[in-house]
Length: 162
Image (cartoon, rainbow, N blue to C red; front, top):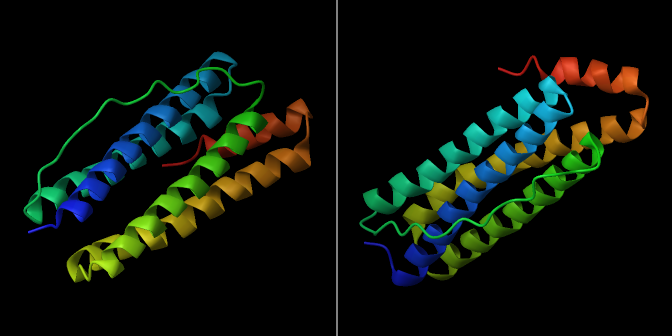
C-alpha cells in the first residue's frame, strides 16, 4: 500500500506526463502548419512516448494499491517563432521533468519506499536519454541558424524516427 505522500506525488507526476504529451502534440501541430513534417513526426512520437510514461505511473499506482487521480491538464502554448524556439522549449521541459523525477526519488528514499525507488529508477535513466536527445537537436538547430536548406535536411532526418 502506498503512503499518501507517495500516492499524491505519483499522481502529480502522472498528470505532468500527460501534460508533456499534450505539449509535444501541440508542438507537432505547429510544425505541421509551417510545414516541417519531420519535426512534427518526431514530436508526435515524443507525445506518444510521454503518454506511455504517464500510463506507467497509472499502472504502478494501481498495482501498488493506490488510487489514480486525474486532474485538469492546462492548455499548452500553440505557437512558436521557429523550430529553434520549439526545441529550446523541449529541452527546458525535459530538464524540468528530470527535476520532478529526482524530487520523486528523494521522497521515495525519505519514505523508505523501496518498491517506488525501484520503479523510479527506470525514469531516472530515461530522463538522461530524453535530455540528451533534446539537447542534441537543439544544438544542431543552433549550429544551422536560419539556413533553410540545413533545417530541411534536419527535418528530413527527424522524419525517419520510428
